Image 1: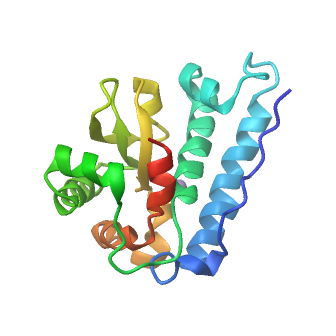
Image 2: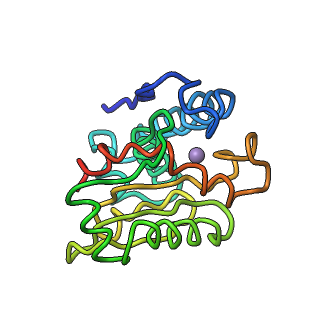
Length: 193
Ligand code: MN
């Protein structure tokens, strides 16, 4: 039977400062994500999903099992694609070419991504994915949803649940969305293409 584990962060808790504080990261990774892992492990026995991969569970399950599995996948993708702040942080190569072709420029892409993150009502995630035709798309996904359930290939996500930013930015979700670009690990995002 599967037992899911909390994936360690690929950086120290203070490394994302000042964009994301060590306190936020400790709560977000150590408490919120750990709870989703614990909840999924507790729900698996007798569910029929005991031997399934995380991706299979996200694509096939519903209700509480979907919610906890989705949140594990979403948070792993979010945390793994962050790193210490860099000035003028931007994608390069084929990923930048694709962004320019689809959105006009990296700045136009950022504007649309932030707008969709800021206007998502309630809790959820804003995503950049490749759709079924290989075209870059930005989607709003509520609660634990992931574009993988649409048959898309997810590349980048910003968590817009309040727990992701409230300690550092209070109600200013747009400020969090504007600041987080400097800590995106574009190498990881490009590898997902
Ligand atoms: Mn979160």
